[in-house]
Image 1 (cartoon, one colour):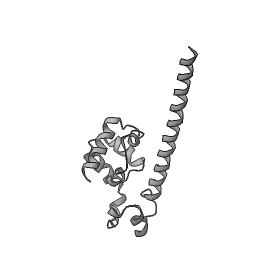
Image 2 (cartoon, one colour):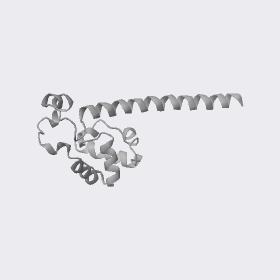
Image 3 (cartoon, one colour):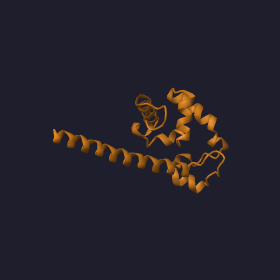
Image 4 (tube, one colour):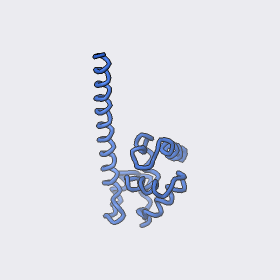
Length: 130
């Protein structure tokens, strides 16, 4: 009986440690995304900043790059999700489709309203567009 209790305790402790590490990694990624793509009212990054983050968007100099409504509509259309879920993705730091290239379903499930099925659909869609 003691060995079962010890095994259960070790399992719970291991799960807590792993969950903490994953959470901290996600927070770090979120801070990095927010630093790279400031809020719509924030300062627009310089050309050098954009090139350092992703060369694919270096030629995009239009002001609608930060148009929140346009981004949310794009997410809704491409991922077949509701406006609330698209807004949650936007608020989590995803500002364009390219932000999903590095994402894995486990990342996306941490966003409120995004379940594993939707997360897999998003990652599949983005990978098919590469």
